[in-house]
Length: 297
Image: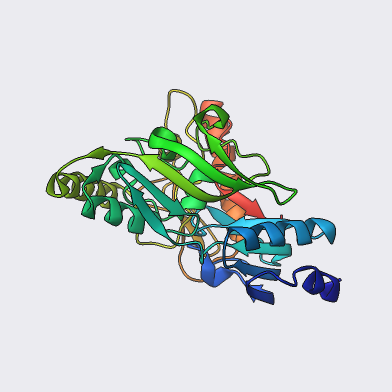
């Protein structure tokens, strides 16, 4: 099987590695290895990788910044597609196009420097563009899709297509991509004074740093906010702040963040989720839904 996939990947520019540890690539710093780790060089190479994995019946996962993923301790029996090499940012008038591997902080700096406003609402999200689009990442101020005008995607058959707004199906924390893989995204923004953009950027970052444990090993918000309420409020009111399972603890700053104190495992994380969910259900009759993604479970 290994030799068959390697042969099928012949012609794909970029690195092809086996049994790659994933924990160092995750914000949570938890998880075992991936059977395959693919780092395509360009859009055509992403298409080649997708087709090769489909032909060889190898499951495929796409890795962004690793900021909302929990990987099983045993790892994942699949190929992981990393988009780091797709990292170009291009300006065309008021439009900014970024590759899937561009980090949101890099994108925000670039738009600020050229005086284009609109993405400051995404300040502090530790994601890559592809992942941010896939999950419609956002804050209380706004979401990824707000100023998005087009996406370049690769479908399961390796076809490369450009989607306009009429194809978008984004909802809360879901970009509605189905099986399509984002390789490029374009936003239409508004001209503004770089100093004013920086002030908004700085204000948002200070607010986020003051209310969320952004410098810790976490996956951001663990649970989705129920309609008309906040998961963090429910978790805190259920007495779960600083609750611990093994090496993973509910943050004392924001109860919807779980922190890996250094020796935590994926099993600890799941056990803590189950305990928190049970306590919230018991106290409020609300069933919390996971916002974080799970690989290998």
